Image 1 (cartoon, rainbow, N blue to C red):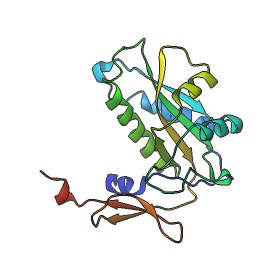
Image 2 (tube, rainbow, N blue to C red):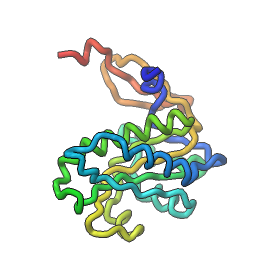
Image 3 (cartoon, rainbow, N blue to C red):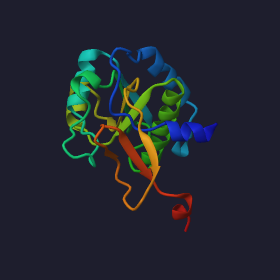
Image 4 (cartoon, rainbow, N blue to C red):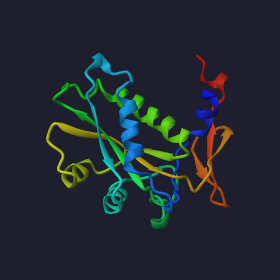
Length: 189
């Protein structure tokens, strides 16, 4: 069962905008995130939830997508995410920002699995305009955005394949997203 989820939970970069991810779903995710592991149990992560269409458009404009894909600047305007979750670090809980990077990864993967289970796709985006996001949402000085999760119902089905040398993901001539993965034997030291 977990293997099926691992295989299915791919980065999605094309979304069905006719089906919106509602605030209720994001709130459910945060309710569940309360239970994930946390360094020193400080629980220093906070979540900015974005479902408003205008704010989603702003978020889309401040993110950079899929560095390996040439001539790609993100989803088309009619295939954009319908929600965003920004994982932030609250410096008032703990000032050590490096300590909490693993917590950000745990939270992001947990959201990925919860979303996948509901048929929702996500794309984790580390390349975004932190200053613009902080200013637009009037985040206090102690709240530091670390990772953006773009969410929506998928309008694509990425294909996993065995890596034959390069592990760079790519789109083929039919615009199908391919994700090469190394074999298990290549991962063992």
